[in-house]
Length: 482
Image (cartoon, rainbow, N blue to C red; front, side, top):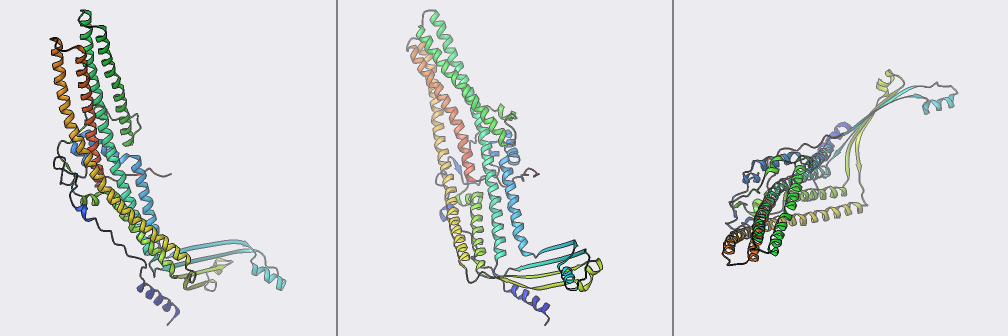
């Protein structure tokens, strides 16, 4: 058998017997309690229906729909995440390149005297003049992946790229939720500003009436001063709410990839926060874990770290490469291309750190420790996902109950104020009693407006905890690099 055939048979035998060392990855099991409904999902606030991918459409608000869609394609944090994904895919392509031979081609042409020429001159006394000389070489090397170092590296890179893709989806969820929250808050602060203006208008009417009655001798200067103080207190809250509204409009502009000066006209015109009046579709815990990309990110990170145990384990074994090289040299084209100038080498290259395997052992210990940490991290992410859903539902449930009580309180205070005005005219109560009922009414209205804002914020928090908003999203194009 020729040497060429022997080398070919060796390569086939090595490839056929190749195996990947290290543990094979198996996804962790979903906790059994996760399949049950959420313990905080009372029928009054939540249903077992799966939440829609584009949950913000449940608000039936075209302005909100437009803003969220803009944010999901133009947000700068999302563009950073998209660029990170491109980088991770480049790392994966680099890992896959290990499956192919490495090659390099070199060519050199130079003028001068070679060491051989100088030796001939020294021995024979015959001067060889300087001349042009050309050399060329081609080298090829193919690493036979007997113990799976390359394949485990590719598995790790695949998992890393999937983890980065999941991280991009985590940013999508955050961007969608923050956009909906900023829009709702801008609307809510506008509502609270209008409520404060209405309170100021009522206080102005009471002050005008009190002033006229004082001029007629029916009220004192103290009564006028008290009514004026109530008006001042009502007016003082208006700039705060208007400033908060502007701040949220600036936030909304940046979230959608625009400078703060380019605020959304539709958001600026909104006067009341959107709300979902029906029970929220939340599904169950098992669907939540399948849907949340941070859980997938943690699982893919664990898969990559498991594969890296195999990469480290492969260092215990020799690395075998099939190498070949060929070249030619000469002082003329004819000499350079002649068969006599050509040389080549073929053969396997074996490298092995044996018997000193201390470094390899240390690398395996590190890889296993990292995988162990990733298991704990995955379990933590799972528990945190379930916790966040339960907390969001509980907070929303509590705010719904508070909101109902505030509605009843507002209505009761309105009736009390109306009756106080009548009783004051009949002399049944004094003017201070009217002011007390007026202040209670305005406080009740302000509390109810703040609860309107809290309700929609809590609803957004529920959907954010449920992990929706990234499915079927349009691709994000990162900025073009220089």
